[in-house]
Length: 304
Ligand code: CDP
Image 1: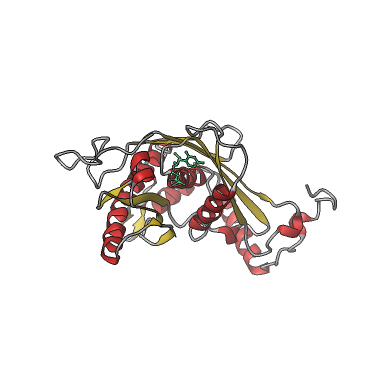
Image 2: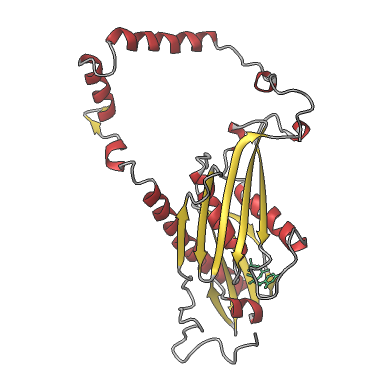
């Protein structure tokens, strides 16, 4: 592929017809892998990415466990057939680096302290690459983590911004990535805190500031697409029904529970009281769990 003669037409539109602040079309499918705890297939322009999440599950070998937290492992991999020139299968320096920075992009939002001794494995397989694969993989992985029901403070959205022919452009296409002056992939939380930033090429300080504003716009658009996809998948939970409404200082769900006790819908009133007593007595005892109890039944030598 040779360098295009020009990157913008007379109306300032890019080679693929996009405005400078426009991202490529994105399509998300959730729960596509039956053996994964969470999964996502994502298309972004001509990029095709599959993400699978396994865990939280007990980490082996046990010497690698952290007593206070789960560890997150992230593996970015390009399929040999994903690019024009077949690439050698397996991890290389580029994939190792992308895996590391992508894992770090999630660490601030995954509530790992809830799963001490566990591991959460995230696999991102690039099936077709067309610039922006690390950001596409992060966007897919965040959905797969949500699909796995892993508690997170929020979603992570990622997008690249770059400079082509002296102009800043959002979400670089392959030509813009190959022949542009700068490429700046960024990932951020839904509150706008940056969790990944890398840069290839050169930008002035002013361009850098402008680029960061532009990429925030891109990440916001992606966040909306991610939210819509998750809403679509989990739409069986009618939000109107589960949203507690406050009626004169008492939430509607409390009113329903009281009525259920009176009308004996969910068991007798005594049964409900018994359960309440159990909860209180457990609280009072406040027995500390044996830290090793979870692993007692795992034989030594089971480590893989
Ligand atoms: O994909 P991303 O932009 O995150 O990473 P990159 O290293 O900037 O690569 C840009 C693009 O170059 C990729 O999306 C692929 O389309 C292509 N590429 C390739 O053809 N062969 C490789 N070994 C690596 C990347």
